[in-house]
Image: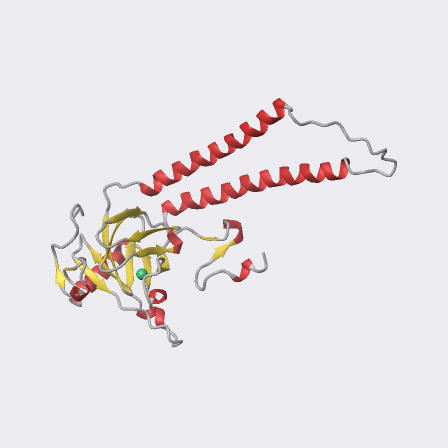
Length: 273
Ligand SMILES: [Cu+2]
């Protein structure tokens, strides 16, 4: 436990009472929290029962001083007992399976989104296309050379609280993974494949994001921020992007040389506009 307490990442608040997870910043993250915590509760209950019975046997049936050396009653081939410890674990696995499927269904749900963000991964940063608003943010790799304030220069993705957000994940080069720890879910970003998932942000604040798939020399510097704000602040940010000329959507095809060139019709097929 002492060793584990040193494992919390900088800037990510993890609570032992929350199973050492960061507090979920999305509605969907709540399903992961519940599933993780209740699985641990079940595991502890089973563990306590097994350890308890083991200790009880060790103490109650220990060898005594006046033991005459005869074997105790042998209980193998006890059919009711064997049925019991086959059926009970199957029921336990069944319950975990049921809740697992339920959580996974919630996380994988695709509905009509309010906001569509095309996340473009590239070695070694992120571009964000705000598809409906027709603006973008072009990211640059974090410079982690020890100078303070590096996180202020990271590309920042703004999301409105309480709206259903769809992430359309595309890569310009190799495989990356889009990870915001506070969302409690992540998804691979593959060249030539479009992955998507949806979240509904529930907590205002600034959250860290990173690449979670080793993607080359500066993988560890492929960082970004997510700012969950109210609707008005979100609109203000979109207007700010428009004003500073970040209009149009950046290309997301398999071409590193296209970075920062604008294009409005190159979103992968099937992306709702
Ligand atoms: Cu990467």
